[in-house]
Image 1: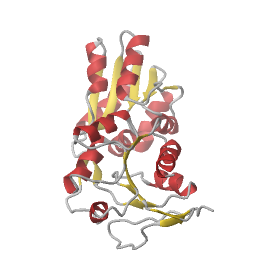
Image 2: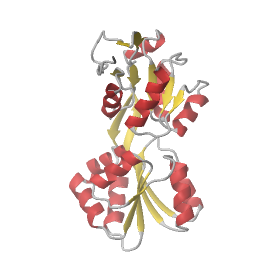
Image 3: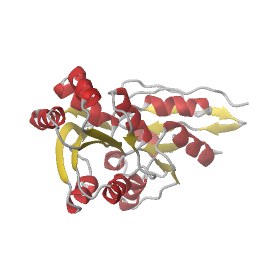
Image 4: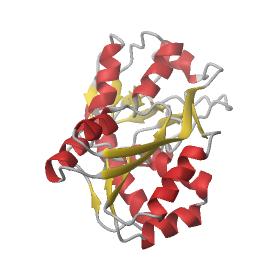
Length: 273
């Protein structure tokens, strides 16, 4: 019988719980390393009886320069022609709201009749809906390239507002611009590698984790900065992230068909079974 339990082990703790007994086999914990929002993955894994360790290798902070975020909001509030607000991550909305005011952003999204909405994936789309967005276009494949291609195919011209982070890939705005769209972008949050080596890095070197979950290329680079050649299974929540793993000369053990926490957990379950 599988035990429905997950351990949390943050870098500030020296936790000694390393595995569960799962059908008479030792199940090592899955390492979750992104800068925030690891809890949804932890819960989804726990429901499948898989332990998890949360130990961020990245830190995410609001951008110090607020001018870009403020300018995007002004464009949104004053729109008198069709406009697209495109969200590429939950953080893009959260930190944009931190800059301009959450209530002001919600009001602008909820009342603006000239704006249409798009998101890279369902989780981000749900965040847009929580801000008051109505219908949200989601691509068949949860990637920026897929979203850009679908937008260009359906709408020959348009104006897009895209808040994002300092490490955001240029695929989406470049594709839209090349197709004749007007694109306004702004950096609203900064992602950087943690300065001090996370305590779980030694666990990776000693193969004390069952797998590492990557949700972004920046997470891949952060992990390999501290452990250049991890020998534990590497799981990716998206194609772009998988490509980043391969660029480091490493092998992807499993690629989730969807970035949702439940599907990712199921992918890991299949890998470890």
